[in-house]
Length: 265
Ligand SMILES: [Zn+2]
Image (cartoon, rainbow, N blue to C red; front, side, top):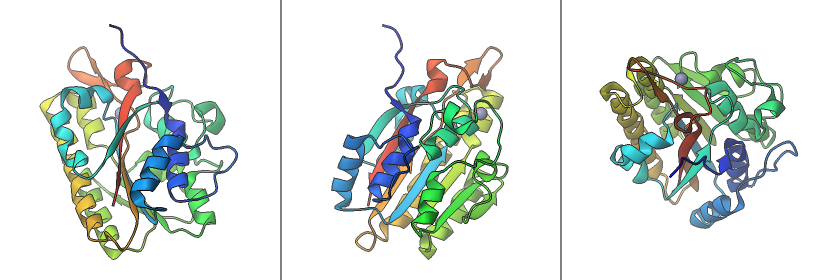
């Protein structure tokens, strides 16, 4: 049996989120995947008014296939998992630009590992126009802090995933933001240094999944008060390199296939 690329492009991500919030989608954006947003809106019993998007960098589909148990903390708070296909190249700025602009790389212009401030319409711009308050919480030097800068958003940073999770927890508890986008890359760092399936890397998968679980528990306190959408949404995977390290950016299945989780509260 040969390997297969997953069906859905990451460019549908912004459309799915916008559709769940009943926000108007710019013409440049790829549409939502109708059945996904329909199921989520049904489970929300309406429109999401609080959204938390957790981006664990470089956690690939093959890691989920082989170490499914590590995702138990994510399963606990989500009800839908969908395979997605990363971008060419399969690197963070290209993939996250596609996720938040609804455009293929040729459309937003980030084709390789460069991090210019995006000038085209992003999900954040849609949120701002709709009067929503949004925050980015990310590890220092995160791609989010480069390509999405210069907007009426609040930007927070911390040196590692746990620090990011602490800030996000505080923001969720204060209940002041409509949308919080979170980017951590402890797994990406460990997988590059020690290999995608190294003990260090798999520990980081757990650390990021457990952080997601803690954030979801904080969101649970608002059950009935808000309609909440939360997602666990990686950007690309990583493949092992001879000598024990990890890399990505190629069209290999390990780099391209990822899986996203969606939950409603
Ligand atoms: Zn990387």
